Amino acid sequence: MKKAIALVLVLVLALSLVACGAKAEEKEAVAGVCWYNFGDTFIANARSTLNNAAANGPVKVVDADSLNDVATQTSNMNNFYTQNVKYLVVNNINTNAIGEMIEQAKEKDVTLIFANTNSPTDEQFATYDKVYHVSSVATQSGTIMGEALVKYWNEHPEADRNGNGKLDYIMLLGIQGHYDTEVRASYSVQALTDAGIGTNCIMETICNYQRADAQNQVASILQSNMDDVEAVIACNDDMALGAIEALKAAGFFKGDDSFIPVVGVDATANGVEALKEGTMLCTALNNPVILGNSVYKLLTLLEEGKPLTQENVGIEGTTVEGHHIYINYVGITADNTEDAAY
Ligand code: GAL
Image 1 (cartoon, protein in one colour):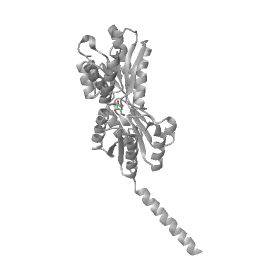
Image 2 (cartoon, helix red, strand yellow):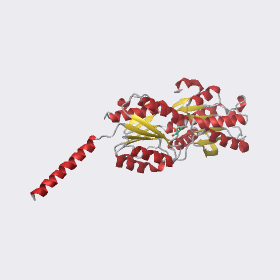
Image 3 (cartoon, rainbow, N blue to C red):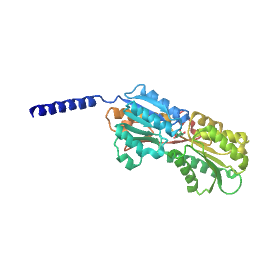
Image 4 (cartoon, rainbow, N blue to C red):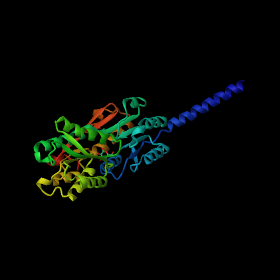
């Protein structure tokens, strides 16, 4: 009996030593970052900002390209879990799987940061305390585009090219189901409606935030609908630039009476060039530098055990609310291109 008790005690001791060892073996301060597409202009800028910030910070960043493919994103995430990362930053395109992603992170005890994508719901946040969200306030970008069109329409009676009393527009969408694009589309049209301007959507089409897709789609609609197109609402600058190419090829932008208002989002370097050249009417600055720096600041605060507060983030143009860092948009036209990030 004494022997048995001694054995149990030895076992308990051994087990607690193993447990202590496991605790001591803390995860290294590494963040795995899944960007949806390295080739996307806005993402490329945010990515290089984040990587540069990490060069001098306490958390190492390793990243992976989801190649705009949900299965690739999942496999990249799983690789990061296998590598035992402490933080996972996901520019998520698997927008229906937010709940499952949180469950998985919880199981692996990894801090999960959703970046530049749909936010988890409050209920989802409540299931795990190590979930964060860093993103711009998409509603603002939609309103900025819509209000620019309201101003143009009110100042230019000739903008009603077919004389039907309504603004006939083409809507170019980003990735299917992506919050930014859904909200940009609805809020831009809402701003027109709120201003009492009737609208008619000639075509709404998914172009995955890609310039070439937008150029092809707009070129094809112009073949059949040349006389009705009165505006292009593009949910990012790359698509706006593709639309402008197609419009130019169809004979627009050749003189005062051949202007079509095209609005976009991001204020990329090429977008700003288009504003200066007089082809793009307006864009909403979506600041990739602020995005990259905000994500890194959050990682730093978490690593240092400091709370996420407005003061601790200390980056102009951001608003902290609970576990969210929101990034504000700024409207950019030919009159204030110096306010763009590039
Ligand atoms: C948007 C941005 C797009 C694209 C997308 C990817 O916020 O405006 O250009 O980068 O994010 O998530």
